[in-house]
Length: 201
Ligand SMILES: CC(C)(COP(=O)(O)OP(=O)(O)OC[C@H]1O[C@@H](n2cnc3c(N)ncnc32)[C@H](O)[C@@H]1OP(=O)(O)O)[C@@H](O)C(=O)NCCC(=O)NCCS
Image (cartoon, rainbow, N blue to C red; front, top):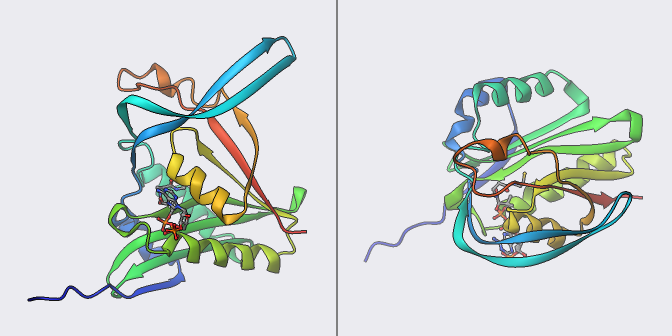
């Protein structure tokens, strides 16, 4: 019987040479449940209620998180920021990129913002996200940030569970952020932005 060995996962700083290889990480997801956002009230007297809801048909993120040339260019721009960017890759067996953490320091409001925290489809639920998160917390503390902030979508229940498990608090939402994307013929659901914060002080 052949025993398949667990890959060794090393986490190291992102380099400029890694950027064209980022598409090795497949950040997409598919889900049977989402956080349904129900709005009630009118004018400025409104409230939102979030409930976990099973879908009739699974939601597939498709290529929306892909490392497009534009996204690679943004990551490269942040790499140029030196000490005020913290970017790490997870590498399997010293060969393949399987995870990315991409965070910057925002001096104006003393927070660290996570642009991307992604683990490849086949490498999830092995603690790589948690390892990247703990590194993010340490880096944000070294900047003396008061909080880490980030955004995900109501369709991304795995990420919501992950961030809640890491101790993040849901601090707001934006129903209009992806309204143009929902006009695409492929869009089955209008995505809603959910904002999270992890207090450090
Ligand atoms: C969210 C994401 C980064 C989590 O990475 P991961 O390496 O799978 O996470 P971990 O294995 O470290 O999980 C840590 C804990 O988070 C929670 N968690 C993670 N994924 C979960 C899921 N699908 N369902 C329920 N809980 C989950 C669990 O409590 C887990 O601990 P456990 O496995 O001991 O139960 C990964 O699912 C991913 O890359 N998704 C696609 C991209 C994305 O959504 N990025 C974040 C938004 S920008």
